Amino acid sequence: MTPSVIADSIVNLCGAIGLSVAMIALYRRDPGGALTKRLLFLLGVVAVLFFTRGLAWWSGAVLLDRLSLIPAAMVPLGALVVTEGMLRRHAPRIVKRVALWGAILLGLAGAFGPERFASLQSIALSLFQLAGFAICTLLLARRDRASLLASENRSIDRLAVGALLIMPFVITDFQALAPDMPVRLGALGALLVVTAVLIAGGSTETRREGILLTALRLFSSALLGIAAACVAPDVDAAQVMRFVAIAIAGVLTIGLMTDTLRALFEAQEPGVLNSVAASPAATRDQLIAELARHPLFESARRLREAELAAYDPPRLREFLSSRRVLRQPQAPWGLSSADPAVERLLSLMVANNATHIIILSHDPVDLIVLAVPVISADPATETALALVRRILASTPETV
Image (cartoon, rainbow, N blue to C red; front, side, top):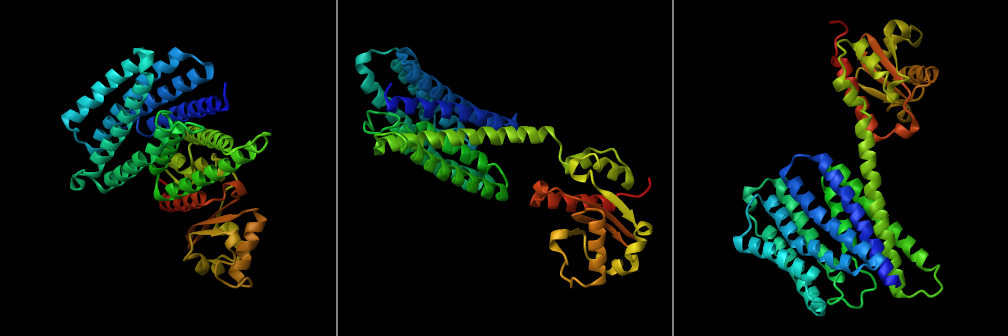
């Protein structure tokens, strides 16, 4: 096998694995959604295409390579199905007929047609795919915005941009259109698009973090590919491009797998708020006992005013009246370090090896002291503590 064939095979197999993982992630988010089913259909077709093509090139199986043209011809049909779902409208009948019959005729002709027409069939298939993406983009751009929600319009805008961005990658898959490309990048473009789709499905903060992580993965994997290419004795621009494409495709695929697995593991282990929501506890003490089963609250200890006699509760009341959660790294909490209330609260934290104090009540003083592990001290944990404090404060002492 030539270096070009090896690189093409690895990139396509990575694309097939990455798209399969993305299908699992999308299904978990919305198992019964109509649009999800349409996306799964398109991703399934493309994943089969990348898998059969990558396996065919790696093994040299000519028949398998020709069979891969069947899912390749179905890609515009899958894109049109997703476009209709996004718009909640049927595409023009002529467009649907061309997409369906084009998939059937070009797929069968590519798989079982005469070998002497292979170049002509490749050109026809590439033009068919590009025309399909262009028509879907045009339908999305000319939609009736007033008939859709603002969130739907934003999602469609992102999808339209993704369809435009993937076209250059698709062109590299057809040697008749790009004969000098050292590696085919269609699978890499698909990985970038599905990564963007999964990022767009989160909240604003999650999207921002996802974009930063993806940019870091792309930059670091590109550097890794360049470094790996320099190990070879004869390095040229084509070889560097192959190594970079393999590194980026591999890192994106691994990122999709680890992100999906982490989400699966987190779903199996309920968080603090889920534990509180599912708890049958009816009183504050029962709820605190329930929380103590969670790793974050295993060190939690409730201290009422009688147990805080050594810390001068009357002096603490005024200080605690305007505060909800005290964090040791933020001491002295806007006051002087020599303030008597600050000194007593810091002493309380040291005595109980605590990093946080949750104020349930300031009159009478009612506190929960706990130690949050360093690896868990993040904004999400701080938000969870604030919400748990609200829930505990509103929970009755007795039924």
